[in-house]
Length: 326
Image (cartoon, rainbow, N blue to C red; front, side):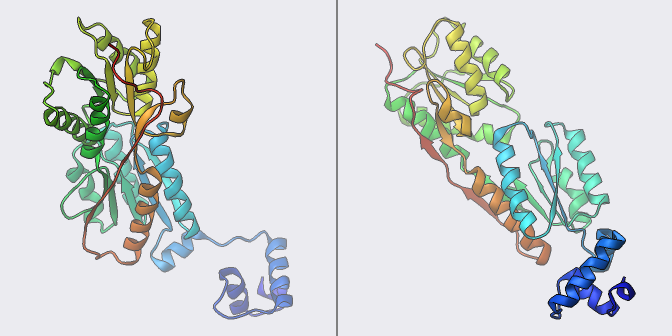
C-alpha cells in the first residue's frame, strides 16, 4: 500500500489512525486512493491486541421490547458510539440462566465493560466479571462495592399513591411485578402513603403480574372480580397500565369515571393513550447517559471508588385520574 501511494509505511499509518502527525492533503488523497483500490480496512482485532482493549461494552437488560429499557439502551449506545465503543446488547428475558450465559460470553470476548440490570442473585452473577477485572455498572440495584445507578422507586410509589389519596380514593389497588427489587420499593412507597393518610392496607387489593400488556389485563380482571372493586389502581409500569385500562373498558367501565389509573415510567405512548395516562416519570434518558459516562470513565480509571447514584422521579398528571366518584 505504501509503495502504491509512493509514501512511507509511517505515513500510511498516520492516515489510517488520524495522527499523530499532519499529512498534506495531496499525500492523504494518494493514500486513501491506494486503500480504496486494494480494498483494505484496518483490523479491529489487531488493534485490540495492541491496545489491550476490545472497544466493546456489554449491555444486559431484562427486556429489549420494553420501551423503558429500549430508551436506556438507545442513550447508552449513543454515548458509547461517540467515544468509538460498540455496544453488545443482550436480552435476558429475566432468566437467570440466560444472564449467567451472557456474563460468561462477554467475559470471553474481553469486553471493556458491562452495564447490567440483574434479575437473579446479583453478587454471584457479577463475580466472574469482577474476577476478570472487567468494569461493571449495575442498574436498578444498590450493591456494596459496585458502581450502581438506581431510581427513587420508594418515592415513586409514594407520590403515585398520594396523588390518588388526594383525589379522595381510599380503595386503591396495586398491580406489581413481585420479582423485581424496584417493584418491592414501589409497593413499600404505596404502603407508606396509605399509612401516612390513615388508610388501611388491604392485601387483597395487591395483585402480582408479569410486566406486559396481557399480564396487566388479567391482573385487572382479578381486581374487578373482588366483591368491592377498587376505585383506583396503581400499576408497576405503563405497559401493565395499558392492559389494565383495556380490562376496565371491556367490563363496561370508564377511566377515570369509574376507576382511575396511574402507571409508571412515562414511556412515549403514555401521553397518547385514551385518556392520556397519569404516570410516574422514570429518568430513563438520564440513566442511560449516566451509565455510559460511568462505564467509559471506569475503562480509563478502573480503580474509582464504587458509589450508588439514585435518580429522582416525577409525577406526571394527565387525564386517567380524577376525583373519586360518589
